[in-house]
Amino acid sequence: EVLIPAPDIHRNQLKNPVLRKLAKLAFIQGNLDKVISLLRLIVQIKPSKIYQADLFYFLGLKDESQKDYVQALHWYRRAFNINSKHIWALAAIKDLEPHKPVPIKHWQLSALAGSLLSIIILGLILISRKF
Image (cartoon, rainbow, N blue to C red; front, side, top):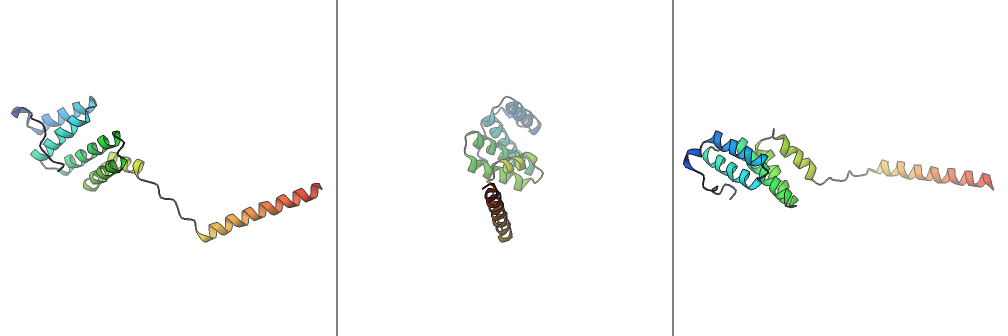
């Protein structure tokens, strides 16, 4: 479903170097839809994990720009699963992934309770000395 046909492009442009340059130019111009269409075409012409990862990354960028963070995270993860050296996908995952709270262990709760109790007792001693 991701690799649906891209828009019509003149036959003499159906070469990867030209398509990559067009995709780069579209990216510089901020046209994510065109970048995605060109990457879809590149992947159809020459299936490559690098291009697929880039396609998924740009799909994630598009969804993130539309504030669909769940879907964006999905695309970033797919990009990273295909190409574990895709540092932009990894950075995006780290930015969007919900942070899990670190569980508090029993000894930490005991230490916190002991510290609070010590502060209260010290406060009471200091107050009683004033009176």
